[in-house]
Length: 288
Image 1 (cartoon, one colour):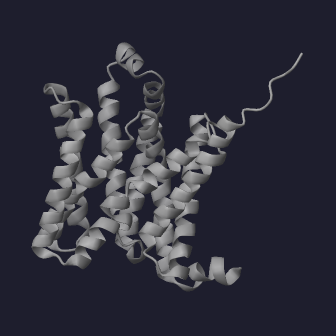
Image 2 (cartoon, helix red, strand yellow; image 1 turned 30 degrees about the horizontal axis):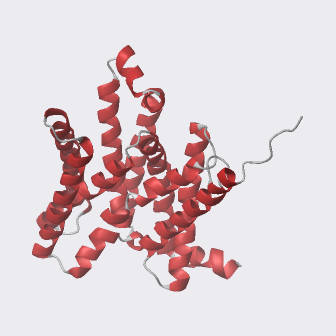
Image 3 (cartoon, helix red, strand yellow; image 1 turned 90 degrees about the horizontal axis):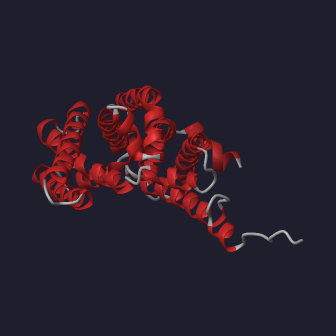
């Protein structure tokens, strides 16, 4: 048991760094995933994950695999796409889902094209699927900084975010803070996707955000417990995925997301709050 569960982390520094990165990511990304899900913006998270690709690619063209350049590029591109999609949806006849789909496709195609101008297939693979086993100190500090900002911001806007999940029109009717909260929340989404991009790439970054959140939804209706379960699911998925990758020699990023997907599947089947087993076996009715 020690050789299977503990030794890979005790004997290898790259495994400890990868686990540290996933744990820190889970504390920031999992609560964001909860609010994306409850506000029915899950696909928006996927769009934003791809939106950072052109910016990160421009940073790569300008400075190579420089952490600051790719982070700054990814943040700028993500915020620009969030604002652009919002403007198109608000001032044209196009609905928000169609607007987001258009920006998603353009961003993905533009990012892959930019990477191909300078990079190799290895570079493209790194951008799309990340390099969680190659996290260095600077990257871990960056991820920790983004997570800290996220937790402070969530503490500030927690109440209005919960209100919007329950009744989207209520906050707008009683306060003018709805627009500010929405924009700040979108910025937090971009921050966490950029942080996750360094570990899991643009294609999988949203996985550590949405799959633990979707799994937690099947176990409780209380948003605080849901958030704690989501963070726990993210950490468990990270540890299990890294062990799976270590022992079976499969890519670490996809292994982490596959383990999160397994937790989601178990939750869909057995979760007491709307899971299939609960719905198919509702229990006996009381008899007089």
